[in-house]
Image: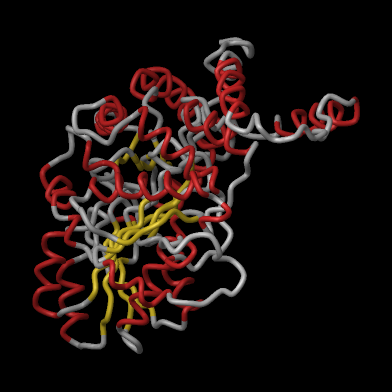
Length: 461
């Protein structure tokens, strides 16, 4: 594939942007003319060319052969809508600063809330999953002061960090062999008391594991804790038609959580940063109450800044999300839902190949679209070293994977010496819909990289 292939860098869409920009300009045609900042001068041109050269120093995040971290390109409709909004540069803090984009944000957030069955809610966009989780735990801390926040040891590391920022006591409990929060471990912790909030992770960033939400909800009924669902990565997968039974049951009950974090900039086709926090009970808005003497003048309507810990926020993010949801409605069986199903199908195919190949120790079957595996070796330490060499050899061949430190018990090792409790495993995030058709190529490169790494000088036989 050549560098000028339109799959890599779409330039035809710039004509679409030009037409949309002309339409936007027509809405302000009555204004007196004003000189615009020149963008065609040689200094600007030189800076942009240098910027382009600097940006070459990146992995090809947009390509299917990049299958390492949670990175994918925004859809053209999101990219173009975001760029179009930049000519206005709205601020979605107060309605004065983002009239149209604030309305678009409310509509887009309501569409996401309906994904979980919520007709009423309180919510807004934010910078990403970290801020979404922070706001949810901030509300929890206000409602349950002095009580602990509990999450699985495979939950995202930011929960513990957020607890430190908010002055909340954070505790982790064990996960089971499938990477999910262990229900018995949670039950034992709850019986000791002092827990105000439990975080259920709906798609861990390490393995894509989905915590057993129905069982957690049963414990919630008994113990009365607040339940926050960190669905930053996996929240959209309720639309996929090929989930296994246990994951499906979690998504079916996701609307029973008290709060939900979801990241449109992951599977929602958006540019960074676009996260979203949702609360089932709109009355928690009272906790955000504040008074600003200089922001609110022309409207008595609810301002998004009155229900957000962030103040100035990019209205362009809301515009891009709104446009994307118009192009790809969140409907079962729709085009967007099929994208998610394709991502999971790609993960299942790669996992099946790994399980059938004696060179590898596959982990449990993926619940979403993340696959983890380790090379078979004489010991866990040797397997970890071999994984790092495979990672490097694959990158030399254009396939970009990731490494993850995970519990040994996740993997079906055969006759491997357990000299460590964790193993450095290989990890692949197959979050691009195109990954499904690229699995044969990915497998070919992985095989070559594995064989080369195994023959490297000093490698264990």
